[in-house]
Length: 113
Image (cartoon, rainbow, N blue to C red; front, side, top):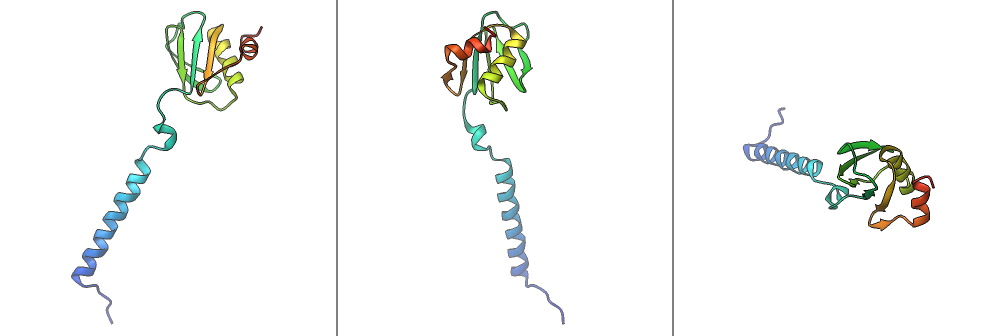
């Protein structure tokens, strides 16, 4: 007894396999919601222009141009991220995380004052 599929059934299985492959590839390569957001998570204004235009501080990769640095979300609270950046670049004039500016007292702690 031989189990064989008709020509139409084989074609259907092949077509379904192609559709499945295309769908799984599309899901795997589609941008996630976190990537879909536009703009940086952190925005910082430094007192002095940065010497390097790229740096890593507090586990976050920063991109700087003049006195402005931006980065994606890091693994720590904003105050800890700010302190790490202050150690790397010096005094920070303003620090914004997710559109909210760091309070003046926390900014002073960030700068070690």
